[in-house]
Length: 364
Image (tube, rainbow, N blue to C red; front, side):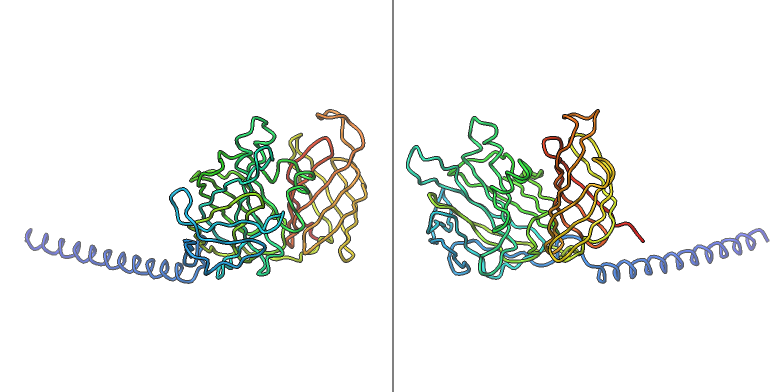
């Protein structure tokens, strides 16, 4: 009797265990199928697309614009030597390098050939999102000799971002000092490895394998959202390039043309403390007008311009007592991009503060 009881007991337990195992297998299978479907169906958030490598041991894939190109050897590497034809810089675009978002890597070096006593910091860089005719592009470039200067102000001009032809180095430095350039530990006649990450309206440049960027541009100036990659150099020097590698990434959902018209809640994070306010804007073609109210004064008249969703605005500002800087009337300047229901960019209050602003469209 006792043996029969235990036999029935263990048979029942065995059936229960088998049932649990079957249910678990079905759950695992279902989860696997769901995960597989998710991986296949969802767009990748990181790099998508095959890397393109351009060793630059020939000139076959290069389209020269105001430069002379030659194959050469420099510091033990096969490379392309680029020299500018005229007194200004020139570039060579890489065929088949059309890129919106992704990573660009390259090795480059510059040899200064101007006579002794002529100041030449060495200019060489990588172009991205360029028009095929080379008339407009964005770029990070280097001034390696500046990094060796005793003058710290000059050292801080070693790495530069520009968006030609509208936003060259001179305009950016005068309007937004030290925002679009920085220091890096580089020097002439030495190979330098660059990595440029482009994502939406942001780009970062990393130098010589560093995991931290030497310069971050949050709010690229150009309306060009995709284009070719290229090599850039300047007169009075020889620029050398090798081992260009381009890896496309999933494109960010960014588009141009957003209207600035409407009411906006604004937060300004400055080096003199935070401010809040609101803007009420109206656009008439490329002209923008409106009012600012909040920190820095109420009902202040705004004027400025609009281009493809990019704005440059200004208004008279009342600098408050109790903050660093002399209280009183000054001028505030804003620039940046509007993207449907949000906007952001840089803002400076003349002689008082500098920082970033973000805005959200007020719902009606």
